[in-house]
Image (tube, rainbow, N blue to C red; front, side):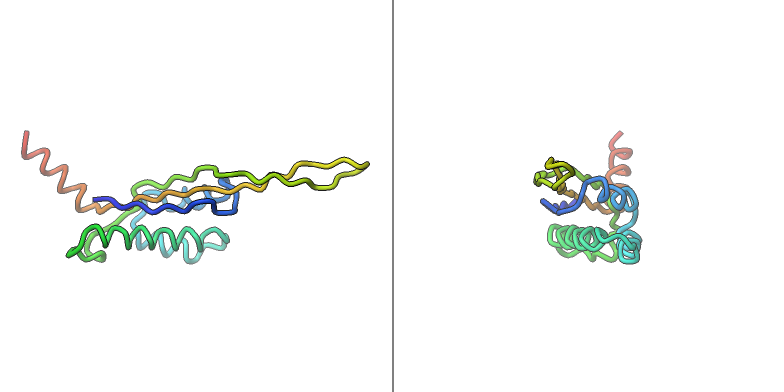
Length: 127
């Protein structure tokens, strides 16, 4: 059973956040948390908190199952653009340039590898 966590309107560009998302996509949760913890990028703190939230959501959905024994992994992670705040920056000769302050939405889905193998084994037995 998978669990989802979402981060909305985080004030950094989606391009910068996707660099970290690509880094942890498909990893085991423990390895992904350690990777984010020691990453020098400032977005890694928010992504680490979001990943821990997804793990907690999985624990709430699957009561009675120990999170440490579940063999969780990052099933999907998506970074989408959010609202763009437009500002004006003074430019030479009385002109103004438009600044676009971007933000993003991040969605993380975690799942147990044990559940995937159990489902595949169940399908083979039914055939």
